Length: 370
Image (cartoon, rainbow, N blue to C red; front, side, top):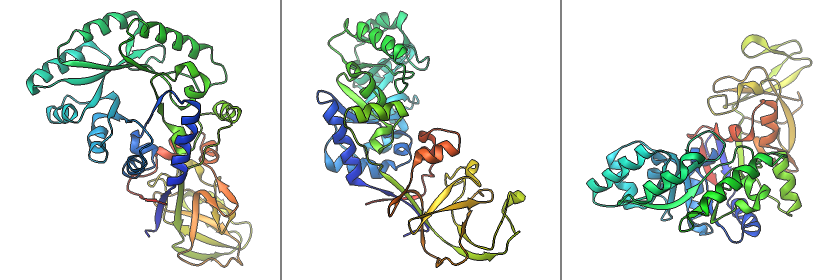
């Protein structure tokens, strides 16, 4: 085992999918495994999803990701956001039935001509901007755009889709407006699949579940917000975190009271202590803003991070009489005995969101399926 690694709990991942199958029984589940599967590891998550055969397809952010994923799965792949106009990649997308997003007519025209050149057709999904003001056709232009795209000889429309701005929020007025506008548009095109629901919207707007749900953050046992978590409890849902992040002590040293620790000497010991040095820093994804704030788990107990987080190292204060040894395991995220360090806890301390904590985990850290 390396000095630092991430454990991916297969049982918990499967459990989370089954929980969503219960509340969306009429919708296909398409896990979103973009951005290295939200930091959990594209290869590892894809292998679990392939072997368990619980989902209908997989979604990623870009064609680059889709190409990598296509060698790991036989399931259909949906690109949600963007792609480069790379002929080699587009030929692969065509042959492997990777569906591509369209959010402007120039892209539709390009793909239609490229399909002619490649002597095949492209499967496409038309993105509708119902109020998030990111990618997608504006509602005022969407109907005409769909009409034009549907008349292209080499484009096969797989679905119409949109994305909500705040489906995880307590207040749902704007989300309902987005959904109503989207469903009104889709009613004019009943021959095409429709989808709008992410993890949060699957709970907050059941009418949004549609032909499929795009299961993102909650696939990994995390909630987009407190409101989403409350709605889950009301639906008797219980998710299990998939990720545990571990490392090993690489040095121990006894420090006297009054000794400063780390760059800029931001912490000075208030008592004699044992300092554990860990081979993890902000390069590995342990945010520097957690300096002198966060805790780690060692033998089931919490201990404080001391001094500034370095690029590849961090320091933890242990009691002077600790029986710690070089090579002992330390948990940075996850369970250790009866104690637990959550992604949400670190997100609060770092003044960010849980999405960022996990997606920043360095892709070169070894992921191990357990």
